Length: 225
Image (spheres, rainbow, N blue to C red):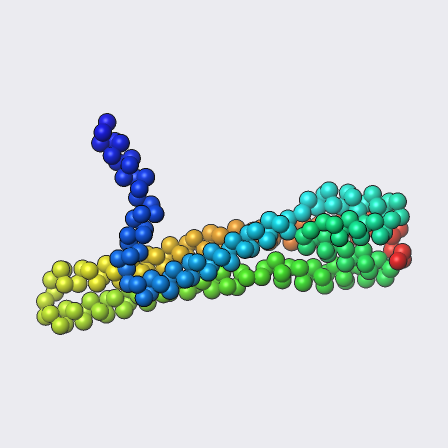
């Protein structure tokens, strides 16, 4: 019974504490660069996740309110609904309403053009996250290679292939690779979540744009200023 509780206690304290100890044991030079990649990558990921959650809009409710205004012939009221709603979807729909006087083609062209701008804003910072995902394991591998070179230098200097001579150096070298891979895995998971979030927002934005054109046709909105 006591043995089981001891194992449980060891398991609870294994995670962060063990990682911290192993990080300290690694080569500080390469470990520092890996840590910088992790910190900067997490900063970009957190910023994107917060921004995308704010940008998520209930498109069905938004289209319903716009449809009510257009059915009453109140184009300006529909524009105010879009202005009062945060997120890229409302901005794209507002751009379409602003070009309603030019007919369906003008509306569709405005939606496509402004939609591309909004998509670029949604994907802002993703290139940096991709960079840190690629660099972190590379730095880890570089630390490992240099650590192995140093281990062979020690063998050459001592003239002995004893495990005690090279074990410490090889351990430090491999730790850089481990933490480089851990960093890349963490950032990759967050990156995939962000990309899926962006794709979801873009799909809703496209569906809402199609719905807006249909509503404007149904309510004879084209040609109104």
